Image (cartoon, rainbow, N blue to C red; front, side, top):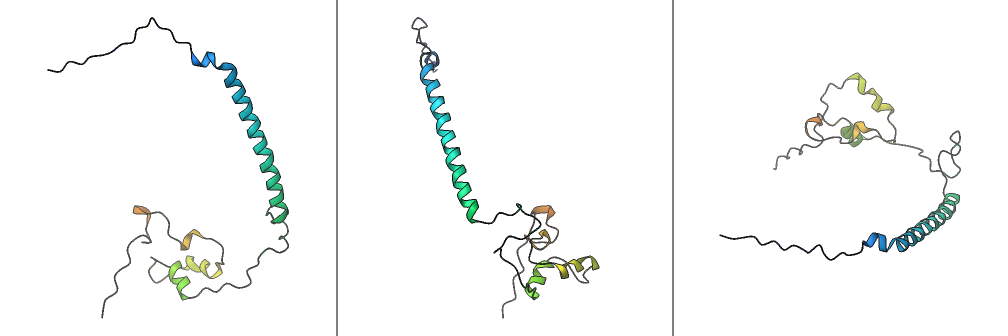
Length: 134
């Protein structure tokens, strides 16, 4: 039978509380940390101002497009694009999908895979069927 032996410290020795003993040093450390943080914020502010002057920022004048901003002049939706957009939908396609004719190059959650599991009603995350080999 094993007996556990516990060692106990005598409570007669009292060690000074480190937080009380080093309180002036801790205050100085906090002050220097605050000064360092303030200097970093000031330097980042100057850096951001330099970058902002070089790159057009959207939203400053929302009524006009920034000069030199890229412009999409044409967007071709070929058969592969329509196959991707109509993935998991069987024919005849409902009339509500006519919006795809007006779909441009902007993001739409309709033609990219979404959630997995029971929410994947269009089968985006299912393995594609194997092609028959000849």
